[in-house]
Length: 160
Image (tube, rainbow, N blue to C red; front, side, top):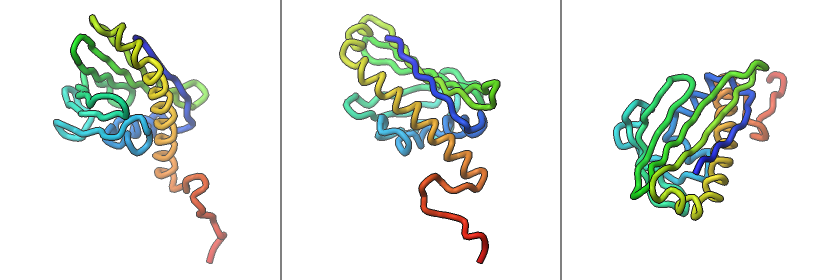
């Protein structure tokens, strides 16, 4: 199974990366993950492992196997008969926006069966994660600029 989701954001690549590398925060911005538990410390570092719980799926331990700080990371997980690799990347676009790409590839003797069982859920979760990451990156950008979140009820009164 091979699935990928791409979305663009007005947040800078730096703000997008800040949201992406904070992997323990993922459950705050996507309902596709209920827990991201660091097993070797919370930092996104080569070799660090994270136990992720997702609704309707068994808890899975992911290991960071590739890291290009500021632009991308890959982690993988092994289950009986299936090797799963998930990639995450942010790229600056010529128009100043940032492209976010996330995807998953499953291989192994049972990968075809797993794809039949969870392909629709995997695609839905990737869409949720891409949209959530976009929102998280834009929230990081607003916080850095000191701007209020849209619809948070704060408005400038123009003075005291």
